Length: 272
Image (cartoon, rainbow, N blue to C red):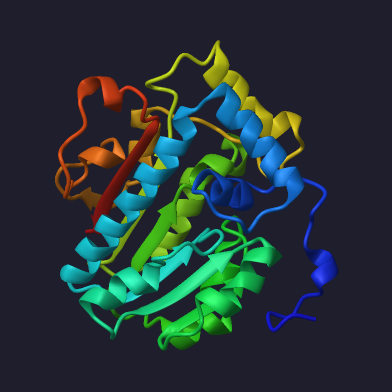
């Protein structure tokens, strides 16, 4: 048994997992052959995925700093994925060591690495949970220990909602979390889109790798309007819902040609 309360045998190494594939895109080594095979197939078809993953990660860092600069002192990071330095709590603690971070993921291997990479600092915790079960996550002892729902919370849904199918009601799931948060809470969200790539070519084939390789979650691309709907009940902060490199950049803004390769949207909203 691991310290997260599940057996090592529960780690599914027979099917690619999006968190481990994402780790591969970022150049990590915490993945299995089945993940590398699927991820490399995506890269071969759609090389932009590497730049997109890196840009999404950098957006997350800037957005976390923004939330903490704005006064957020507690964060729920759902779908944290394989820990990649710097992690959410490391970015947050650079601004304020007081920030408490509860990490959530549904992959047991993430929990295994959490013990080594996420829980060494104070004010952090991890729970094995599924975004599709809000009540289980919100009522979990780890959440209740770290998060005070009478104070604003930073909710992170970074590169996770595109693994929720339309028939699983992603908007309803986001609303369930939103309704549990007090006014002034922040939603940090990013999502893949097909708005910048033709989906009748290699980009579409790359998307379908998640299905064809039997990954534990399939990929659903959504338009700007669809992603914007997830912010219902939140006021978007400037510059709104944009491609990640355009969200409060701390480096030179990419050219239009470079942006054409970034099939992602990201934004931060504040609960009214």
